[in-house]
Image (spheres, rainbow, N blue to C red):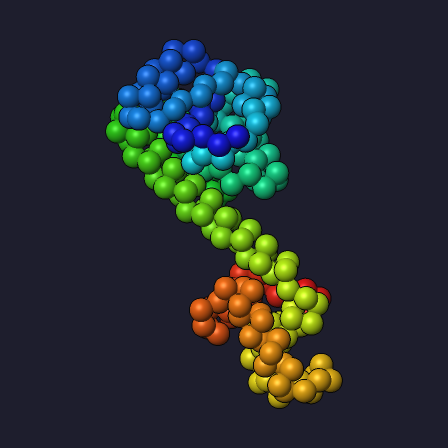
Length: 207
C-alpha cells in the first residue's frame, strides 16, 4: 500500500519510551508506528512510503541487532537508528558496521534523534529512487529482443560495430540497426548513458 507521509517505526519494550517518542515524532510531522516487540514489528507488512526504524537494542525475545540482521537477510533496506540504555563499544561498532544510521544512548537529546531520523528518511528516499530507476531499466531491457540484448552487451563492453558484426556473424549495417533499436527502447539519450545503464544492469555474457 502507498502512504503519503514518512513513517517512523519505533520498537521498544518500555511503554513510556514508546509514548514519548510517538509524541515527538508526530510533532515533527512524521507518522509514528510503535511496537512493543521485534516479533510484532517483523510481522507488519512493508510500506511504500519513505520510512526508518528507531530500534531498542535490548528487547525481549529477538534483540535489536538480530532484527537488523533479519531485515538485511530479507533484503529489506530500512535505515535503522539504535537507541539503548545499556550501550557498549563492541555493540555500537557491530551495529554501525551493519549499516545503522546512528546509535544513541539514553537519555539522548530530542534533537539528536530528530536529526538522525531526518538523515535516515533522506537515505531511504535515495534508496527507493535508485530501486525504482533500476526496476524501470529492467523493464526496458525486458522488451529488447535476444539479438538486441547481445548487441547491447557487446557494444557497451567497448567493441566496435564491425567487431560485433564479426562476433555475431552478421553485417555491420544490421548491427547499426539493432544498436539504434537498443538506444530507442532503452531511452538512452547518448551512448555514454547506455553504457551506464549496462553497468547498472550488470550485463555479462549470460545476460
